[in-house]
Length: 375
Image (cartoon, rainbow, N blue to C red):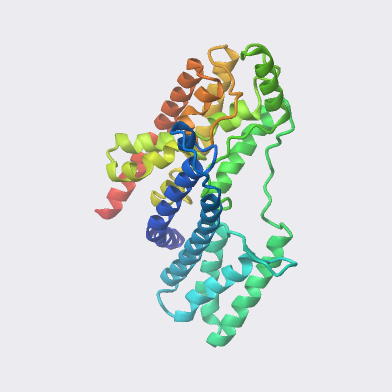
């Protein structure tokens, strides 16, 4: 009975994910446009030598994207509560939206309002509790008051950073400690899979650690990438190889879907994945909360980093040193970050190929499971 209940909840969650997928897709394409074209050092802005100043549009786009993502998550909570409660009380959906709105509202000393995006997991938990507990409250007015109080309590908890901070990956260490980096990368990916970390934005490729800064200084001084002081650092291994296609190295997932002739899904997401935006893919399949896909989602980045480290160790590839354009396609991060080192490009292609091989059997199993249920 518990198994059937879990399957029903998973099906309800997946159905709701499908409903918000178009909004997530629009958001991702707008982010792609913002980062590559409207940003002064954006990839397309630099490639096509665009001289226009889009700073005003860039600022407005950032604000509108935040509003769009907030409304999408509120709509997700509204639909999920509706699907879970089977339309028993019309005000339950509004209660979920009210809780999330109050929980995410921040009012500064100057009375200026800002919004904090709720995590997907928080939306799911609130929707579930409202659907199954609030309906036991006798009067709609009491439910609305209770929703406001719950939202206010969650707001206080979020402002004090309780339950929302995960162990970070230190950028101050000059050399990589694999015994700590590996578990932390797996933890970060698992947190994304659980909806604790929202996957809307792409991963920034910035040089800000002491080791990466020292490497850049040495490269500019000697005009080559030989004998760098810290070839193994978070910039050259973690941010360069663990996000090919976005968190979870999902560019390999896209190619696995292509092999299985999921052409429509690939067509909608391949451009986004090339640039590191994989939120629509995580929602549509879905990858989030999917027990079939958690293993490749967590393992692929680790293997990709190991391939990059092996190539650098054997001198077959050079570590990425140079900072590149905003929104650069993820498969070009290492090639451009090494000023055109072919070994780095080969290592990247091999990492994507291995990610594809990891995802492929799990995607096949997922497709077989779905076809069995349809039959």
